[in-house]
Length: 77
Image (tube, rainbow, N blue to C red; front, side, top):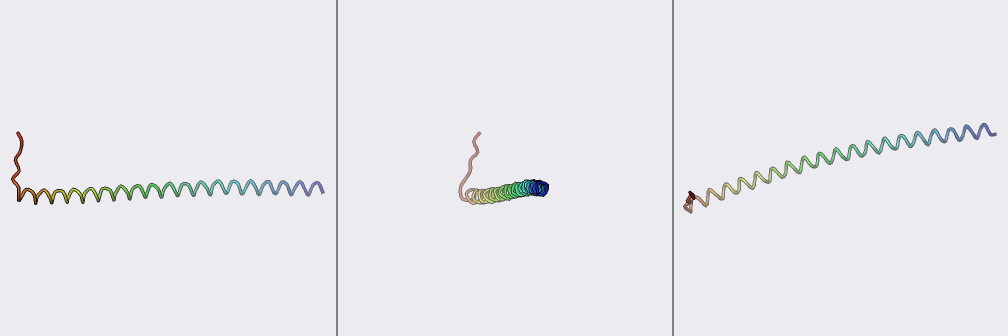
């Protein structure tokens, strides 16, 4: 009976250890995937910010052209 209990305890320890190792690797994979998604989101935010800045620049240039047509612009020395 004692031998059977020892085998059961050993089997339980092996299964628990195997599950723990699997869970840690699974968690690491999830964290790695989440970090990568964060990088992709940062890249998209950066691209969107650049698009907005370019649009703002074009709008500013358009307004300047309009203002310069109706107003005289003097350059300071």
